[in-house]
Structure formats: C-alpha cells, structure tokens
Image (cartoon, rainbow, N blue to C red; front, top):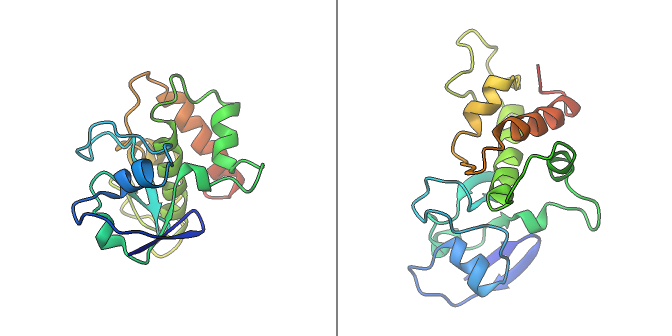
Length: 172
C-alpha cells in the first residue's frame, strides 16, 4: 500500500490491523501525533487526512491506501512555522506539550471546516448556509472540544485559534 505523508509517498507492507497512528510513529518515525487514550477520546493523535481532521488511532492504515496525510511535522513550510504553530507559541497555548500536535492539527481542520461552511452544534440556526461560518469563541470551543488538555491550556488555545481565524477573515 502507499500512504502520502507530508508530501512524501511511502510504500508500506503492513498488518491489516495497523492503525495510521502506529504507522506514523513506529514505521515512519513521525512522533508528533501522540498515543493518548488509544480510543479516539482525547485527540492527541489528531492528524489531517485529505485535509480533514481525524483521530489516527481509530483509522486503519489499509483503509487509507493512496490518501494524503498531514501531521504536525508537515504543517511548517520549511523553516517557517504554520500560522497556528506561531500563534500557539505567541499565546503560550501549551504547557507540557503532549496534546499540542493534536490540538494544532485539529485547529487547522477547524479553520477549514468553518471556511467550507460546515456548521457545528453551536452555529446559529439562522446563520447563512453555504458560506463560511464565523468562528466565535463559542464556535472554537465547541469545535475543539474533542481535543483534551490535561494541563488546562484551553483559554490560550482558543485565543491562538481565534487569532489565526481573525487573520484569515473567518472570526467574529
């Protein structure tokens, strides 16, 4: 099978039970995505598959054959950090750092979902359909709720995501 990870194609022979998370960590040496709960409940393993955020601990690698996966290691553009990585540093939106890669990958997905007009549980019913969803603080909290932080850096994480969403014109 072939997985395209951070722009590089990898031809792999794997046990059919191997998760994407295990491929990333054990076969490719990409240790940014963390194995937190291994049940899809904490979000520490969040990566992007075809631009959509997923819990990589729940995804079987064989089901992703030919797909494009982006990890925290693939977000930067050379030496230039992704705007969310910069915002997390500027806002001090991390403490121990264990959940940070998953938080940032999830935030990248949140920004794209909002730009694509996907509503969340807190999106007002009268919000215009088809256009971008404005990322209020409440929207960001709701959309990021699948990513846990045991250190409690949530206020700074929300601020960092809001900063970038404002820069991209999807914040209110």
